[in-house]
Image 1 (tube, rainbow, N blue to C red):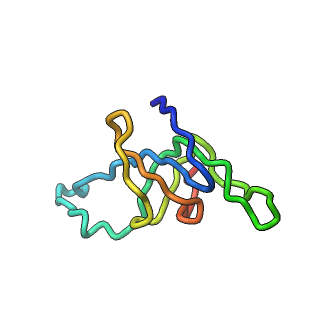
Image 2 (cartoon, rainbow, N blue to C red; image 1 turned 30 degrees about the vertical axis):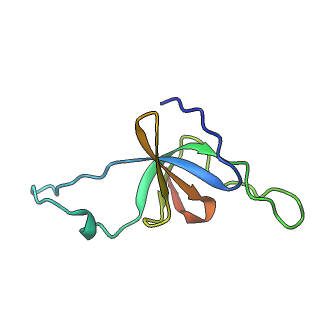
Image 3 (cartoon, one colour; image 1 turned 135 degrees about the vertical axis):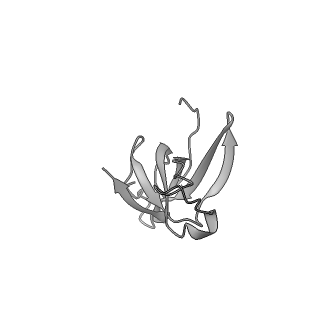
Length: 97
């Protein structure tokens, strides 16, 4: 997916990865029962927030990383027909390798 978006500050644009809606046994799992972090692929990374020293904070994630982020943190947008999330760097919990 090619997207021409440039987040500001410490914002990160993420394409969500859809989790399975059913278990291996075929049991439907509603969204309310999925009390876990969200997962997605990083599409764009801002330059980092400006510190009190005037320098920019380094960003821990890079475009292409698969990340876990806080479930209730993202702002949701539709860009070119795709649902994307925008989160702050502090809301990213882990990078999955």
